[in-house]
Image (cartoon, rainbow, N blue to C red; front, top):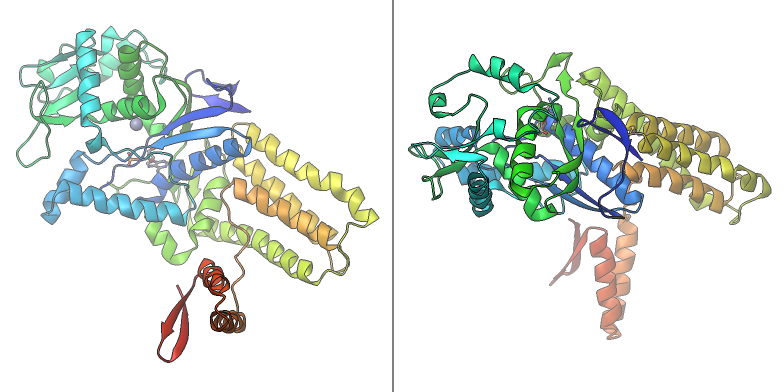
Amino acid sequence: MKVYNTLTKRKEEFVPLKEGKVSMYVCGPTVYNLIHIGNARPMIVFDTARRYMEHKGYEVNYVSNFTDVDDKIIKKAIEEGVSAQEISERYIEECKKDMAGMNVKPATTHPQATQEIDGMISMISTLIEKGYAYAAEDGTVYFRTRQFKGYGKLSHKNLDDLRGGNRSLLVSGEDQKEDPLDFVLWKPKKEGEPSWPSPWCDGRPGWHIECSVMSKKYLGDEIDIHAGGEDLIFPHHENEIAQSEACNGTEFAKYWLHNAFLNIDNRKMSKSLGNFFTVREISEKYDLQVLRFFMLSAHYRSPLNFSADLMEAAKNGLDRILNTVSNLTFLSGKAKDAELNAQEQEKQAELASYETKFDEAMDDDFNTADAIAAIFELVKFANTEVNGESSKAWIDAVKQKIVELSDILGLIVEKEEELLDADIEKLIEERQAARKAKDFARADEIRGILLEKGIVLKDTREGVKWERA
Ligand code: AMP
Ligand code: ZN
């Protein structure tokens, strides 16, 4: 498997630090609003990378944070007259709902900045001890950027160019910095803001330090993959590298993966410009599986444009797969022969070739666009090579392959069959009979079967009633 590494600007063979295991950190959202479809892009593409690596047999430890203390959260809290914690908790819950809708797996750990303050104070203290950070008079702690020799290696920036650029950005408080390049690790509290005690002043952490601390705590000093949107390369990820490597004395992350931006109608999408859609808005019009399909139809490092037409095209594409799978389910139920016939046996190698194509695409820096093209070829194959004369074994094998490959991309293409009302009534009758015969084990079993299909039973005076949950 090859991945493009922003650090080396090359596609490299992926070799994990520990055989069979992958440690991966993905910078998560700042939770002050419903997430927008731009935020959804890293969630979907890196969830897909995770799923593919799991498919290849790796055990993936996937950590993604929620930034739950930040100026924007505090601003929103003040506007609503509630605490910052109330805002962040609300939007973490909402974010998790959107993730579930997009079939993004929960991370192994979802740490939150406000729960990790001790770790941040400890890392900042180490950086001060090692001479990489200093406290100014008002208690602000800065990272001594020039002290870290590798600064600029991820964004491929030259320190002197940065200095030129930064000088014009001098703002209040900057005069206490030793160097304009230095960045904040800890800042003093302002009236009405959440704060924590520290050796330097009551205050709160800067943004960059949280990821260095959480990555160290949940994944260790050295990790395989660190990922996020390309806007994070500088300064966020550059600063994370400086903090972590200065503190730990080892290389922070081996591979740095960055997704390109999602634009709207060929314009940069941003909350400040007001031209953005939340995932929730999209969910009112489409199944979020369509949004997932749309995101994966482009390579994650290519800019992607969002428009109503392209979403319609994505819906049609996904429907093509869904229809074929549903047709195969229908044919399987009607098939006369169980075993493969001679002609089907001959076609087995061709069936397998689509999976090879899929894997080759995904092995090439998670090329989901080509992986989807391989699924479409397989769908075409299904539509020509499976018909009313096919054996059940053949129909099921073809269907299974489509479902399996789609599943690696996190696309659910097989709808759970719903129980018909008549089937439910029949099972309830059987349960009543079992209870009469004092076969409570069977009665419970039937209740369980129904519950699995979302059918809830209620024993009432008028008899057993049921409803779909
Ligand atoms: P934020 O909440 O702004 O910190 O963003 C959370 C994640 O979403 C980061 O990885 C960003 O790089 C990413 N992101 C934000 N906007 C976009 C966009 N328009 N396209 C792609 N990724 C984005
Ligand atoms: Zn981060």
